[in-house]
Image (cartoon, rainbow, N blue to C red):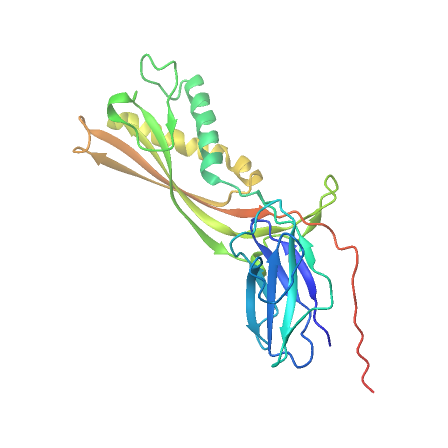
Length: 289
C-alpha cells in the first residue's frame, strides 16, 4: 500500500483545511505533513515549510490544519514524508493544493431581532387604534429598546426587549441541522451546521403609573398572540409567554412600574457552508482468494 493525500478541503470558517491521508506505505514508523505556498519541498525538515504534523504510524490519518501562516485566498500546497526506521522518503504523489477561504453564511433565526421588529409594528398599530397612549411630545410613538431605558432621556412609557439566554436543546449527528440540498442558483450544495436553541427574551413594559402598566401588559400579550402565525413562519417555535408585575422604588428618581414578560421559543441557529457537488468517486476493490 502506498500513501497519498486523498482529501483536501478548506473549511468554511477560513484559515483552516481538512486533510485526509489514504493509508501509509508498508513499514512506515512515522509520517510528516509539510505545507507551504511554493509547492517545492526539498526535504522532510525543510525550514521554509510549516510542519503541520509529525505523527506515528498508528495516529489518525485525518486532521485539521490551523497552524500559523494559513492565509485565506492563497494557494497552499501539502506534501507527505515517511520514515521507515532508517530514512525519510517523500511521497510519490505530487503535492496537493487548495485555497483556504471563509465561505460560511449565517442562516440563524435570531429571535430578538424578529420579536423586536414585530413588537415595534404592533405598538404602532395599538397606538393607531387608540389602545396605547404615548407620552406628550413623543411624535406619537412608544420606543421599543434592546436594553433598559435611561431615566432622564426616556419618554415613558417605554418597552425593552433583552436577550436573557440562548441555549442549545437539540443537536444532530455531526452538528448537521438539515439535509444537504443543491442550490440551483449557485450550483453548490448547501451544507447547514448548527443546532436548535431555546431562546428566552425579557420583554419589559416600563411605566411611571401602575394603571398604565396594566395597559402595557395587555398590549404586549395581544401583540404576541396576534403574531403567532408570523412567528411560526419565521421558525420561532414552541412559544411561551409569562408575565408578572414588578415595582422598583429605589433605582430611579421616581417609582417605576414594570410588566416583566418572559418570551421563550425554539429556533434553528446555523451556518450554511456551500460546497461543490461530488463529480468523481474512486473505488478500490480488494479481491481475496
